[in-house]
Image (cartoon, rainbow over all chains, first blue to last red; front, side):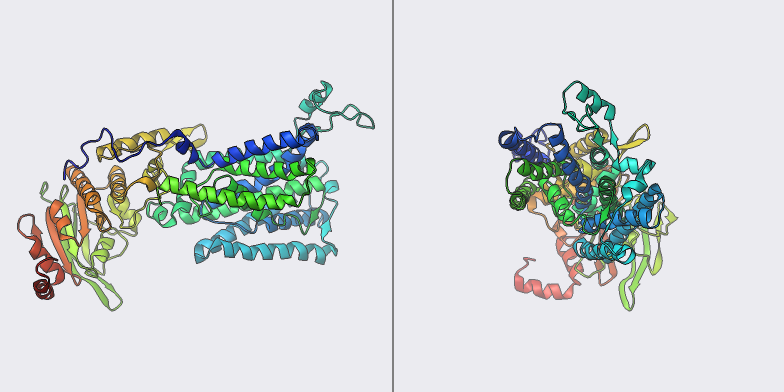
Amino acid sequence: MSDAHTQIAGDERIKHRSRFREALIRPELGGIIGTAIVFFMFLIFAGDSGMFNSQGILNWSQISAQFVIIAVGACLLMIAGEFDLSVGSMIGFAGMLIAIFSVTLGWPVWMAIITTFVVALAIGALNGYIVVRTGLPSFIVTLAFLFILRGFAIYLPQTIERKTIIGGVADAAEGDWLAAVFGGKILTGLFQWLGDNGWIAVFERGTRKGQPVVDGLPMLIVWALLLVVVGHFILTKTRFGNWIFAAGGDAEAARNSGVPVNRVKILMFMFTAFCATVFATCQVMEFGSAGSDRGLLKEFEAIIAVVIGGALLTGGYGSVIGAALGALIFGVVQQGLFFAGVESSLFRVFLGVILLCAVILNTYIRRLITGER
Amino acid sequence: MSSSTPLIEMQNIQKHFGSVIALAGVSVGVYPGECHCLLGDNGAGKSTFIKTMSGVHKPTSGSILFEGQPMHFADPRDAIAAGIATVHQHLAMIPLMSVSRNFFMGNEPVRKIGPLKMFDHDYANRITMEEMRKMGINLRGPDQAVGTLSGGERQTVAIARAVHFGAKVLILDEPTSALGVRQTSNVLVTIDKVRKQGVAVVFITHNVRHALAVGDRFTVLNRGQTLGTAKRGEISAEELQDLMAGGQELATLEGSLGGTV
């Protein structure tokens, strides 16, 4: 018995794995390949349609950035083993709160935004608290909030303003420091310089003659990049990241090892709500208005982006970078079909197909990692 | 035994759940460097007993001496902090996570870079590989997922982890019950290695042969009571089997089965 493990130099039972299989178990792989394919396709079919000039790039990057913002939240939450179906309704609800606070009640916009964030985080915490306390599937709990928040997003403006779209936020936000953090643009000097040198398109005539058509990097995109970097760092490089994996991998085992699973899950619900509110605030600042139907179906799009990015629906495995690539694929395809002149309803067909492929691939990868058959 | 005072001593422990008497006065002492086997059939009170030892349950009466001092554990964290670790039947291991992430789960080493506290992966990976090598497991790499390990190897990882984080008393709750022959022997080898490091091992099992393979002393529980503690060499497999089953019934059964149980 004592010699059972003395031959330590090499175990003949461990098969050497090829580099290909090693690469396959990286969660981002699907996202990387998908992104490459998507860009390749559109370079061929829509390369001369303006998709890859400055306005075109800004167009699909903004759409992608929107997906990225909610996908990062959904990704960390899914790795922690839970879903949030109330993301889309939260976007509508939070946007509506900002408009009501700033336009109807006349608060300064910064105060409206901060209050909205506080309310949203509290709702996220409530979601999480109910899930960890009752042990109910988060699918059901957040489904309830999908309806509750959407209901309020319609009821509040209708009761207060007798309409479902509240405008005038742009005027209220004029010169507000916090509004600029969500609706402003940075690097305007750089873009002017690029325009002056003729590298990006400038207006040919009119009052803005000589100014670049794309005059800066929208804060929406900055937020998306920031959330990806922070999310990726937390997940892979910190102790808390290990707890997120552990909470989603096996909550009971994590608890036995001293991981504060409930705290992790509640915090992830709050983070998802935070991301949804960032999305909502950027959108309200961009449009200058809030609408009751904003963010419809966004929860599913976020989840799809995360799954394309290689995360497992059952939790415990995934990558923020992957989710961001999933969101990029989303944005590029949605806008690319428009540039390529393809009927836009086909986008949904594409979504369904790619989701199915991603889930099948992920299941296969899961087997590879755990060695199950 | 290598020391004259027990590392942990359970004296006359009683535990009642409402009207059910789960433990009716059990006394067991475990010395450093010994493997103390706790045997008993299902429902004998093994689980209640080790849960009392690891701070999950408070005894209804009786006292627990740890390193000679009376101990009152408020919850399992107290017991873990004192150096009493339990490796559960359902392991605290997450198949999708790497061995190194699992090894340090809940005890992640942190490296500070300015205001940022980062998970020190280099340290975690190095220690994991070292500890696994000590236990005789050759990992493909520290990032190998636990899911690819066999059941016995997972037990070994869990045991190595408990010992690394300062367990003085290691409670193993039926570590071999779901394992094959070869994996079982791997776990028994691990127990032997851990014992030689001076850890007091409490090995819960209902398999007499596994107990006899590594045990220094054997305590049999039956219906919430100890039927005595025997030293290695003083008792045979048949006697242990008899004690576990409460003697009489099994004797008649055994007759009809021709001594195969």
